[in-house]
Image 1 (cartoon, chains in turn brown, yellow):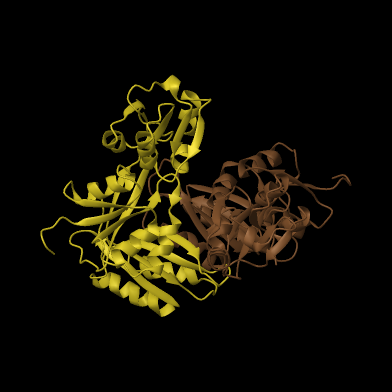
Image 2 (tube, chains in turn brown, orange):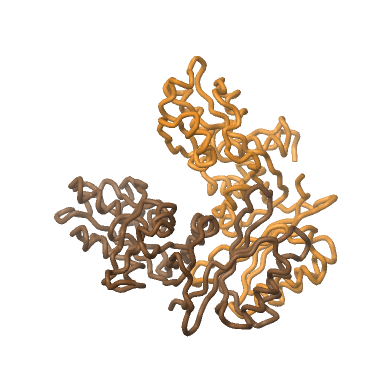
Length: 277
Length: 277
C-alpha cells in the first residue's frame, strides 16, 4: 500500500458513531468516507473505492445489527479487525438555542429510544422526530439553521457542526457500547490474541447445533458470540454466526473448523483478526 | 370462562397480518382488538382488558422480531399457543385507480423491502412511503380517499377496506411466513405434541452455551429455535431463548430443565403449548 491515507467507508454523516469508531480504530490520519447505507459500504470496499469499511454489528443494549450479518454472508469481504466504542448521546442545538426553545428533537429512532426517560424528564412536550442518522440530524439543524429544535448526537458531531451541548449524556443506560467490525477485500494474519468469525448452516437434524458447539468445547475454544439468521427459502432453518477466540492459523482452531465442516451443509470463515479491547 | 367471545389483542389496523393470524388460530368467532404497539398488547393482557394477545416472533425471511422476545422477558405472561401464516403482499388501491395512476406506494418498511423487485419492475418511478402498518396504509387510502397511491397489504385488508387488487402476490420470495405466539395470563397444559419456550442466562464461562445445549441433546430433546438477546447492563453477555419439542409436564423435559437450572444464573419457562402446524 502507498503512503496515501487509508480510506474507510462509514455509515452516516460526519460525526456519526461509525466515523468515531473508524477514528478510534485507525487513528486521526484515516480518511473517512461517508455512505448512506450498509449495502453501499460493502460495494465501496468490494469495488475498491475505499480500502476498508467499518460496520456496527452489535449494540450492548439493542442487540445485533442483523442487516450487517446478512450482508457479510452476501458479500465476499473479510473481517480484519474489531473495535467497540461507548455510545453517549448529547442533546445538542445551535448556539443561542435554550432548552425552552426546543419543540422538536431529531435523531435516529434507536437513539431516541435509548434517551426516552431523559427526554420525558427534560422535554416532556417536545416532539420526537425520527431521522436516518444521529449526526445527520445535527447537520440538518446546522444546514437549515433551525433554532426551535435539538438533536441527539455525539460530542464529535457537536464539535464538527459547531453546536452547543444543552444536556450531556442523555442515554438512560450508561452501559451502552457498540461493537464494530472492519472489513477489507483480503484477510489478515492476526498477531497476538485473535478472534475468528464464521458462519455455517446444518441439515435440520436433532442435536445439530449441539454437535456444532461440541467441536469448540471439545478443544477448549471459547465462544464469544452466537447469532442465528433465517436461511432464505428454507422455512425455520438458520445460518449460525459464531465468534470464537483464536485464529485459523492455530492448529487447534483449524482442527475444530475441519471437524465442523464434517457436519455442516454450508461453511465460511468471515475472518480472523486481532481481538479488540 | 363465560360464553362471551374470546377477546384477542393484535397489532395494527383491522386486516393486519396479526389479525389474520388471530383468526387462523381462534376461528372466525374471535373478537379481535386492535393495538398500536407490542407494549400495549402485553399491558392489555396483563391488565385483563383482553384474554389473549397474539404476537409475531419470527419471519422466515426477515428473522426474529426481537422486541417481542424482550417484552416476553419483561412481562409475566405465558405462551399458550403458536401459529404461522403465509405473508402475501397485494398491491391494492381504491376502486377505479389504475396502475398508471399510482405515484406512491404505502406500507410497512418490511413489506416494501420484501416487494422491492416487484415494485421496481411494476412501478419503477413510484415513491415508496413507510407507514407503521400494512393494513393501516390501506385504511389511510380509504379514509382520505387517495386515488394517486396504492398500498401493499393482505387480501383480507383489501376485502375489509373494499379495495381492488392491482397486482397480486408482490412478495419477491414466495417462502414468506410469519410465526406468531399467543400469550395469556395463565399457562395451559398442552395435549398432543407440545412445544416449550424458555429463556435463560449463564455466567460467562467457557463452554457455558455448549453445556446448556447438552442438557437437551443428552435426552434426545429437539431444539427448534434459538435466539440470543443482550443482557442489559452486562456488556456482551446474553439471554438465550430456546424452543424445544416437548412439554414441562413430560418427565424427560422436566429433568432437562432441572439440569439446566444447575448451570444457569437466570431461568424461566415462557410456556408449554400445543405445537402449531
